[in-house]
Image (tube, rainbow, N blue to C red; front, side, top):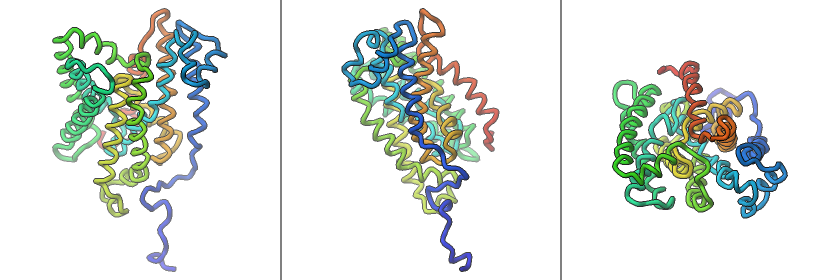
Length: 346
């Protein structure tokens, strides 16, 4: 049979990634998720016995708010496990823009959602169901603005231009957010606790409001994962392999907005988790997005709960909110990526 008559190899088909090893199934991380959940209960200012912690983690939800577990805030902290799919959104952004530094915090999406939430609070919207839609709108405007600004000029949307556009947009939006909060003392009081990033403010109603959006966003991300493998090869190669670029980009963008917007509402704009998780997942699972995204959904809660535990033991008897801990740990990681990632535009 001639070369022209041979069937294409599996790794050359759309959605396929050639790899020399099969990654471990991500479910092996479930014990680590459970362990960090238990650790978040037994460590801190209000430690609970290990047996009570185990019962709280694996028993039905109503029993979780009683005893020591209730005093240590476990019902809220345990919900860090459920927004785990949100950790997939930065990897989708990185594949969509072919930028290893992309993330909701770096590209200004968190800043846009934060400003929208502050405006909602100033207008008297206090329920999550109300300002959730403001967060989606703010995240969408931020993504469109930053990508358009970063695409201007020669070379298109390079990693450096997108990062600079995100930094400029975040600075501008941050100033606008400060103006709104200074003009309204009540809004400032609500905002200053929310903007730090915390796992202690969410309740069952908040989770119920955002869970459908997180689920739909993650399903959309998984649906786009095979095509993102092809998009990573470049637009021309993706078209030659039959990828519908417009459909892939729209699907990916919608998933990012749903995941990033919903997670920002429930826990605040927690920095750098979204940047670190995709690179850790890729180091474990390899380059295939169909494996990376499920890994992100499990690694995210592990890091978030570990950062929460560290914040509660580092300055006892006081407590550092999780957003402060992730910021302190994430900034050096970002510098490491800038210095060591092999990005041509850098």
